[in-house]
Image 1 (cartoon, rainbow, N blue to C red):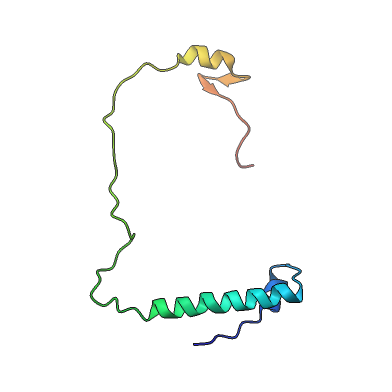
Image 2: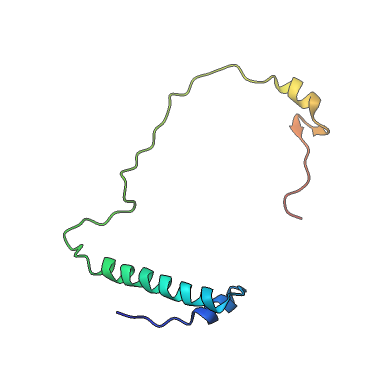
Length: 94
């Protein structure tokens, strides 16, 4: 199923300055890609169960373990500015 795409117009929209040789090359390559996409759409998937992801995914959680951490007071001493036991930073939104 041939699809006519104005590659020069698409390149202009993308602010790409393409030579005539490149326009012809991309027109051919786009034709191959669209032909392949057309063939993929013809595959009978009626017997396949719908998937949210092509690979089975499971969350892998590690056991929570209490481990030594940085000393809060020592870290706060290195901060340029603190207030009430917290770091003071610039506001993210004004």
